[in-house]
Image (tube, rainbow, N blue to C red; front, top):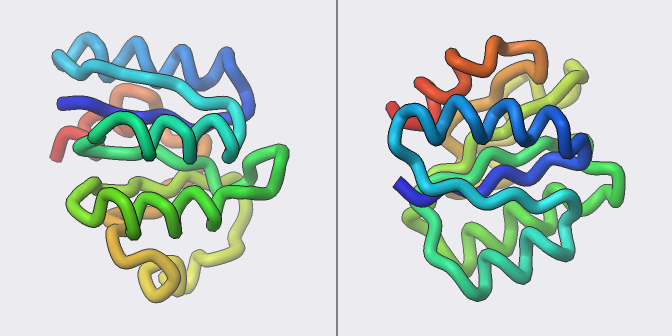
Length: 115
């Protein structure tokens, strides 16, 4: 499974990456929306783990590009806020599959991605 992690906090992205690699995933990391969009244009992903609170504020742009370029890719949104806790993220992103808190244990996040 080819997975893209889009996370401004490189250390957290690496922790998530490690858990996904243990499950057999091939993982790339982008630390901002521009890098994520470039990777989405160049590489086919099965899943995208996308932090809604990217430092550059481009998370929804990344989600839009993923929906346009890779509609089959499952997008798992991660957030540390209650914004979108009403489930409205699923109306904003056609390939959204989950919304989880940033504090979700990394091994659980990896299982959600694989599911």
